[in-house]
Image (cartoon, rainbow, N blue to C red; front, side, top):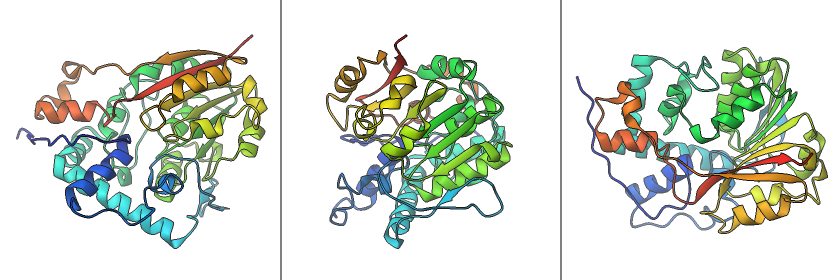
Length: 326
């Protein structure tokens, strides 16, 4: 039976991917009510975001695994995360992205079919709340940066730092692709940290993926160096963390940064200027997707298919690739 859903297209959204889903869901389900005071303030926003770097959860040993897990800072943080997840799932059901993702996973499995992380296995717990799983399983997620990732896999790095690691797409993928390398994954969301730990275990790299919540300047300074590649997607906190004054070792590290000018206008220009004394910079712009490349999605409503392949990305986001000067 052909899958067909019509897609509503909310507009005026400021955040990307899963954080975008939360806002859409809240608009759809609480259109006449504002969120609780402070919930979406700059100080507390990372608690709700799928990817971020600004709370201070305490690291605790993982049970039954050598992967470290992180507890939430408070009951409020856990409640916020649960509410965020519930709203994301409600939005995904409403638009049809959720049902389409579950059908795709059932029909095609949870193994990545292409791209730099081909063969990586996803876990079932991620399916219900993911708006970008289909592009990841197809192997076309963030295709614009594939040349950078493919170079990293053969460049001789022994350490990778992933700030805003989410469920572990990059953290686990890099650990699989570079045998012997250690990966340090940071995310403030306890739910996705547990998913990342499970992903690492399923893919046989749990002993080389260390998961934590809050990435400080001091921690990043201890990890940066000439054999370290740093990936940042922390929803607007890039300017805070990429500070050469507080993290001088970054001068020796290669960086791939998702730049959220939609949240901080002028961020791309500011970071290029800030890092120019130590790094050659290249900005990578988003590219349109070609649905014809994916016959697996041919039965989907075209609007829904395009939304899925867009990775729920909003305008004002690009990537910066920063390579240390010789």
